[in-house]
Length: 120
Image (cartoon, rainbow, N blue to C red):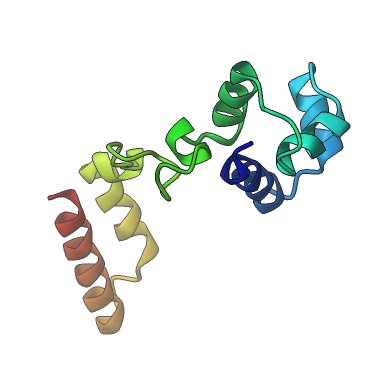
């Protein structure tokens, strides 16, 4: 049995503060005792359940299998949609700062510059 898989499944569940019972209920085809066996590496996790975990927690199977430490996988560079729309992000930043404050103007400028660097 692969202990890494059990540890990852347990960490995903605990980090989202979901109980074993609630997770089993969300799946609809699992019982709480199965979740417990999977997390404690006492039972092999069927591939359809692994896929369900990946979808439910929005992580990659590479992460669940312990092939990488990033939930998005080895080759996937996660870019939140908000970073992809520069005009929308700039409008949001403009809204967050008081234009009459000199300190806020500098903070806004710094933040916008950081956002531009992030997009490169």
